[in-house]
Image (tube, rainbow, N blue to C red):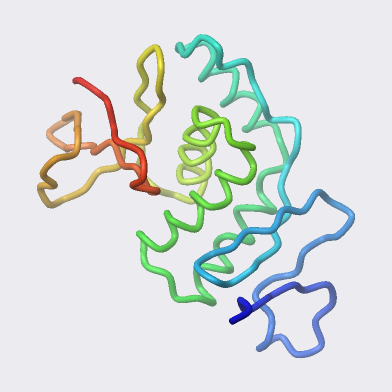
Length: 171
């Protein structure tokens, strides 16, 4: 079976669209569980992550914050409403975008997840060691088998949205 496709250039019937994609801007296509979707995104946000430290993360934040990221966040929020995604579904959608934008750079992938989730209004933090970067999300329930750190009496879990990779982290 061929996946459903939601590509939109001009809308005649708003009930049939998810959001408009500006074809003059860079476009990426993702497969969100069988639904192919186009999104606008900002290019040129790569930073040198050969050394994972506070300076590299700050450089990414500065570059991403000064980019035209609002269009993508608006598209993600529209998609969330139209598809009736809960928080986890939205996080998985953000992860698909981050994976595509980062072009297989796992550290950059996690930084995009962090940035997009923060700009979407989520409380999340970033953790790192010399080899990896982790998105830390507050989760009210105890989750066993996942690393966490406690900040101001709140547990922030090192979440892996793709679950194919084992987390190797000590806190």
